[in-house]
Length: 268
Ligand SMILES: C[S@@+](CC[C@H](N)C(=O)[O-])C[C@H]1O[C@@H](n2cnc3c(N)ncnc32)[C@H](O)[C@@H]1O
Image 1 (tube, rainbow, N blue to C red):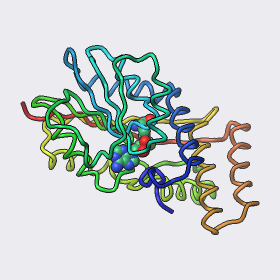
Image 2: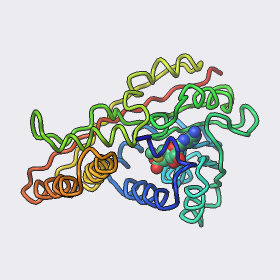
Image 3: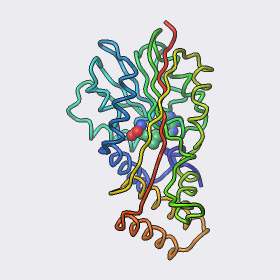
Image 4: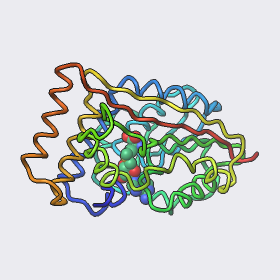
C-alpha cells in the first residue's frame, strides 16, 4: 500500500475527507501545538516576514504562522485541490493568508520572494524530498530561514512489550501512510546538500496514555490497512481496535511518536 499523502492527488474525496479530519484533530492537540511554538521560535522571524508553507494540508500551520509575531503574509501550498479548498474555508477571516494548489517539488513562483519557508510533516510523505528542499532554497531570499518538522515514524510504538500484536497496526500504518519513515535521520545531510547553513536540531517526544486520539487513529488506520491488504480478516481488525480501547479504559495504553525539528538559513 502507498502513503496516501504521497498520492494525494489520486485519491478519492472520501480519503481526502478522512485526511482533513485527522489533520484538524492534530491541530487541536496541545502537545503538538507546544512543539510548533518551540520550533517556530527557532526561526527568529524578522519583521514583516513573507512566509511560505509547503504541504499545508488544511492550513493548520499556515494559520498559526499568520498570527505569528513579525509575519506580514503567509502563502500555503498543497497539491491537493480538496485540501486547499478546505484550508480556504477554515481560514476565512485571516486577511494575510492565501492558498495555492502546487507541488512542492516544482513551485510556480519566482526566486527569492520569501523570508521563511516551513515544511511541517511533509518531507516524510514526498518522494524526492531533496527537490522540495531545493525549491525552498530557491524561493528564500538571501538570509531567509527554513523550518522543517517531521516524525521519526520508524520509532512509533503502541507496544506494551516484545511481540505485542497491537504493534502490527503501527507497522501497517508506517507502510500505508508514511512514504519514508526514516527521513528524520537524513534531514541534516539533506539540508546541507541543499545549501542551508547554521542548523539547529531539536527532538520532541509525543506521548499519549489517556484519551489517545491520535495514536488510536494510527491503530485504526493500521488495522484497516491490514484488512484491506488481505493479511487479516474483519474480526481480527475489529479485535485489534477493541484491544486498544480496552487498554485505554484500563489505563494500560501507551503510545509514543518521536518528532524532530530543524531550522537553518540560506546564506546572506
Ligand atoms: C501529514 S500532511 C501535513 C499537512 C500540514 N502541514 C499539517 O501539518 O497539518 C502532509 C501534506 O503533504 C502534502 N503533500 C503531498 N505531496 C506533496 C508534494 N509533492 N508537495 C507538497 N505537498 C505535498 C499532502 O497533500 C498533505 O497535505
